[in-house]
Length: 155
Image (cartoon, rainbow, N blue to C red; front, side):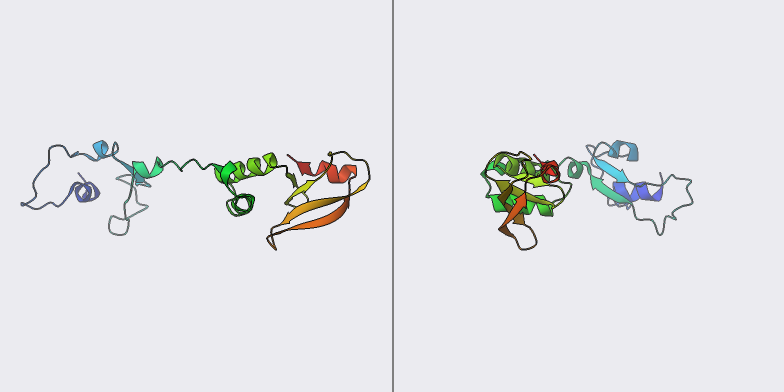
């Protein structure tokens, strides 16, 4: 048994009382904890004096985020989640919720837009409402509904 294993298993003095339900071998500990970057016994990458063994309970990796009812959140909260949690599953849920609420995502403008009427490239000037994430307000603009503008709208 190496020094790291002895440290994991408890104090090595005479007053130490053995608990039979506690694992006694490092291999058995793998059922209870996750070893992060443990070097090989013969490895020269880390010396035993400078290498700190990182022990992370397996339950930390198994934590499930609560299921949020995104549909019940205010649309401004959905905007916040979308723009501030990139790569998170909540970002995708917020995106889907905003799409269900009648918004389209404009890829070139990188914002959500909504408008009256259909999404048809008829070269007419129409008013859109878009969410300006820099100012954190809804703004209105007149745009030409041409093929280029329509091609950037995603739902």
